[in-house]
Image (cartoon, rainbow, N blue to C red; front, side, top):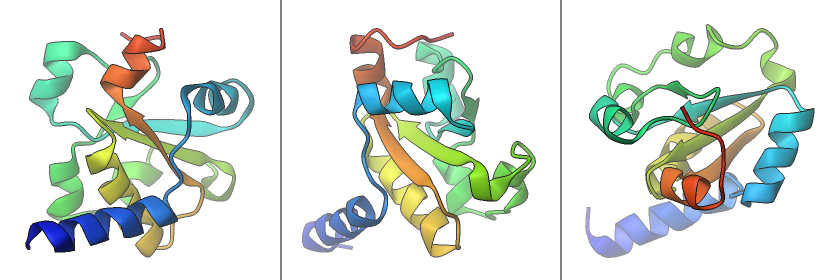
Length: 125
C-alpha cells in the first residue's frame, strides 16, 4: 500500500469514526455508558500507562484473528455502550474503529492519542 492509499484509507476511517476532543470525551465518560479501549501494543502500555478505566486490546489482535468476544465480553449492552478507542497518536485507533464500524458496531468514537490525554491532565494509571 502506498502513501496515497494509506492517506485515503485514514480519511475514510476518520469520516466514519468521529474524533472527540478531550472535553467531549470527559463528558461521555462522566455521563454515558462506555468502554475505553487502548489499542497500543502491550509494551507501549507497560512503558507509559493506561487511561484510567481503559482496557488494552492491541491493534495486532484486531488485525489477526479478530473475535467479537474481545470487546463484547466487557460490555453488557452493546447498543447503549459507547466504544471509545485510543492509541499513541490517534491513527491506529481510527483504523481499529473503522474496522469495528465495518463489522456492524455502533457508537464507535476515536478519542485520539494517549499523549494528548496526558497533556490535558486526563486521569491515568
